[in-house]
Amino acid sequence: MERPAQPGRPADPAPIEREHMTAPEIARVLKRYELGKVHSIRELRAGDPGAPKAIIESARGALLLKRRARACDDPYLVAFQHGLQLWLESGGYPVAPLLGTREENNSMVQEDGRVYELFKYVHASPADDTPEHARLAGEALARLHERSAGYQSGWSAPEDRSTSLERVQRRIARLESVRPDLQRVCARLGALGAWAHHAIERLGRDRSASWVIHGDWHPGNTLVRAGRVVGVIDFDAARRGDPLSDLAQGLVQFSLRKGGSDPDAWPDTPDLRRVSGMFAGYASVRAPGPGAEAAIPLLMLESLVKEAVGGIDPSGGAGRREAGAFLTAIARKGEWLQEHAGELSRSLAQRGEAGGSSGDGAPPGR
Image (spheres, rainbow, N blue to C red):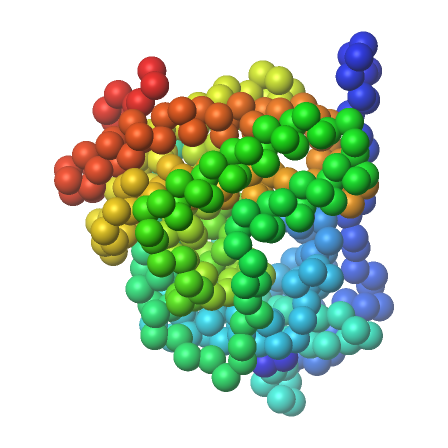
């Protein structure tokens, strides 16, 4: 198997430049497959700017061609992730099916030092911002964890054995080196990350990388049609890890409230109906384990900080947003989670006892 300036505030940065595949490049890759007549090729501007995509209309139907981003294109890692996708598909789990090459039936093409994948295109929409879609996503993640428990691979998934706190500290140090003006907000985020890490340690949780997880569970990777999850996509971050951390990352991503393009206007609170809905959906399929409700808010905070400082580009920018305002908004959200961790834990425990409610009760801290 073979993503006009206000006074006293920096101007909004230019968007991160999106990579593109050239027509000759696409043609060389497609020649490796048995596709019949190709009717059209068009660029799909979605997801990671470093992973260009194209929709191919062919005799074999609509397909999605993707060139892996540099950070995710190690062939051994791709082989591990493709094996997982094939394992999930063999059990009826809704993934975008991979196509094999004409001669070797390989699930990837390696061309000029780059790695390409070709999938059947899933006609569906990303999950929306309703509690119902959050519940569906929770159920789908639980089914993925149940199915992935049986996955055995001949390929080893690389594991970063450093702690989440160590990874956050490295990212903050790198960010402060290129953006000294961000030291104050970085200190806030570093303190939040350390608090979450030590609070999780006090719970005595086993955080060994003993399970295969998706690693990037968010609405854009959860495709819904007619009230069902019909496609889970983007396994570029799949690896061995902690399933509860996978769930916590999803809870963050599904409950973020941005409220416009200006981070200063973003609300501090997550959408607690979606938190409850997703957690209840997960718990209706797979028990999260003893003490999960106490750990979830801490793991959410840890994930929020780690994703925020890791999402700043090497030049210190945050895509279309000014990095200082973006990180300050994240710090406010993290401080809300820190303050209300106990209340949120109790609320999740009540949802679990209710046996799958979508979570319409009064949220904590309100």
